[in-house]
Length: 259
Ligand code: GLP
Image (cartoon, rainbow, N blue to C red; front, side, top):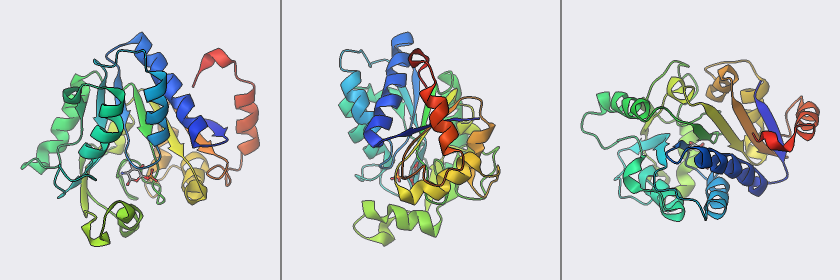
């Protein structure tokens, strides 16, 4: 079972995740981070910038989960731009070592395969950060995505486009397609850290953690992974049936163990 940690707020979750990432980088200076976009992982990146202040991050590598298709990579809301602004610059990572899926590649049919090959060549992802969509997507794996899927082009649901419209001036500007790591790709990372905050995520979190494993809720794929940490605030945890058990378990955990 995944480890579920219910924290007071997003800052506390960010700090827990950042501590685990710092410990990883202290062990291995060329660690491979799986980077997520959206608002959810931002507290992790902020905490990481503080905690990693004395650490050399120049050899750290990174792979983003997904990218919009049909959006100029230079657009401020392309995930390439977001990762540069929120991760590479504040942390002082080496830009060439941090990749986003090449959604502007003229050969989109094979671009995903090549991205997966790059991840493999880097030795695989050590820690994969994940947010969750209100429809239960991770990366941009919308409901119905195969658990064996690899990085490929997907069509965004109307709900996801509406959710992401806040990042664009005009809702029509939200791209209709994306290039996203597949669920099979994501499940190959050695440690998954899924974060969710707020009431709006409560139902998706319940399904991901306690619901049946089903392609209708792609995040439920995390139940198939041997090392998963789910960091949620009280609101996102509000529909969890076993909340009390998760609290007892975490309260009884030795501090040295980390997540
Ligand atoms: C976006 C991203 C996901 C992200 C999710 C939630 O569409 N592709 O990787 O987890 O939606 O976004 P937010 O964290 O802003 O709620």
